[in-house]
Image (cartoon, rainbow, N blue to C red; front, side):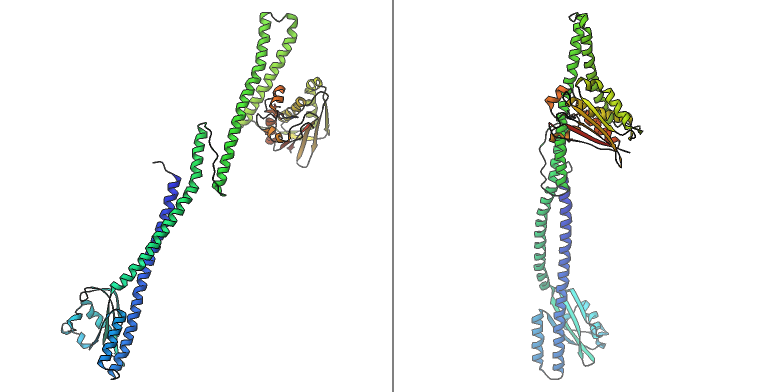
Length: 468
Ligand code: ADP
């Protein structure tokens, strides 16, 4: 049988509850029984004290034998006991065989007790088996004192049955309450265990479904504790997975499309050249198309490779200090062809003594990706401003353009892998959706952070810092 959290919780709590209540009830039962015997003892002692007083009056002639008998009888009635008053000499106890206390009281334990009573002790037996009464009895024996002498003993025997009957009633109340508590507690434990375990069980089923590639429902824990938060995290993880899966699928679709388009045209042109459909005088034109298509393929595959490399954690930075202006100038120089093609102007604002501590190739790549986007998304005659300035912690770079801008809702998302703000617009630009993600990862590898500022139609600005 598979182990379940629900059963484990239920049995653990239930056993603790049952053991605790049973121990408590047993303790109460014993305490109550002890109390009942003590109470009985107290009653018998009071009665013995009264009888002692009456015996003294009887000895002094204050009351008659009949009156004494009545007192003893009523004390016996009130205390539910049989009372004997024995006149006894200490010497008579020396030879037990010679002692003949009304055959009635011929009980073995009694002779020892009588000796102790005559010596002035009070003897109490809680639960003595009595042959004479044919039952268990509570026994109290006290000395009969006359002035300073002990003239005999007052013996009281009360059947234990009555105490047992009362104890049984009390036990009934204790155990009925205990069972009530166990049932109520059991119900609460059942509900609590269910409440704790069912979201976890649901999550287990949902996680299994997800691992098998199936979709699953959201988890509803409805509690404001760790389990509730775990369920929330699980739901958002599930959403994230679905999102990643969606992005992955769309990436595969777009990458396949992006790869196929240049490949198809390269293939077509090469076929045309081989078949002689394309004339020799047109070769230059078609070779340059083939070249631009292969560059596109090159860009795409290097983006994918770069991402894979970053993801595998193999990328290590080689940081050193260098003039930022030099790096920006070489970037603008290398992009000249692209800029000129669209008649875009680049303005650099950076001091000659601006020093940045970075891995030159990686920082160049970050700027290349960002400026490359600005060129892509800025129309003819637009402007791009690149700025680098020192702060207390390092160098802050910003690249601003006068292009179409980024919709507000996409500002955070454009740094996600494969994310392209406007699919239809971006498909035409041939981007993979990896450029900014690579830039973000490289900036973060340097210990910096990156963000985008823009409103649609108003140009975009990407700002990042490289700490010292
Ligand atoms: P891509 O290869 O598609 O350019 P990026 O990760 O570099 O991928 O950029 C993600 C998306 O962010 C782009 O597809 C585009 O929608 C948006 N974006 C980035 N830079 C700019 C910019 N300067 N102006 C307008 N949109 C931009």
